[in-house]
Length: 158
Picture 1 (cartoon, rainbow, N blue to C red):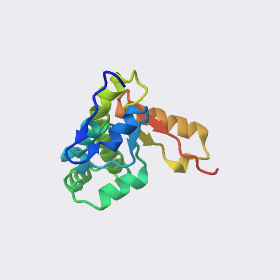
Picture 2: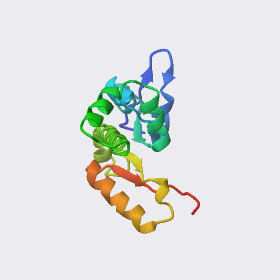
Picture 3: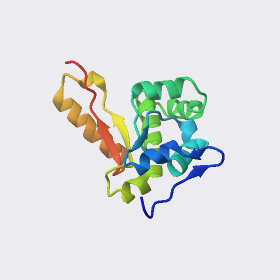
Picture 4: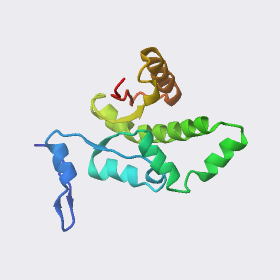
């Protein structure tokens, strides 16, 4: 551990998340929402607590969008532009994934692309269609346009 900076929180001792990092364990946040992005808490988790990846899925985004008014203005704007509900959902998700990936880009670079990813899941409704799953993964990859995006394929029973 020579040469590594150990962060101690005042009155708390060694930050347990940074302890894990010191031991070579990656800490991923299993949650993502615009509130984390807008209020700076995601950036703080990355910079102060060593969070080195973020996973998302449709249930996480459904909760983030439906339990907060933070998305309302964007939803209204996209609806006024004529977007369908599926297109609105995808635009919101892509925006959040891009912002999170941008926050983790330094981690991705510093770890020589071993860490610093944000995951995005293809639709589980495509589980029985390999070609459609691959096509959707490629489409999402292009739409997000971040090198530290990880496309997830749900392990759904076919």
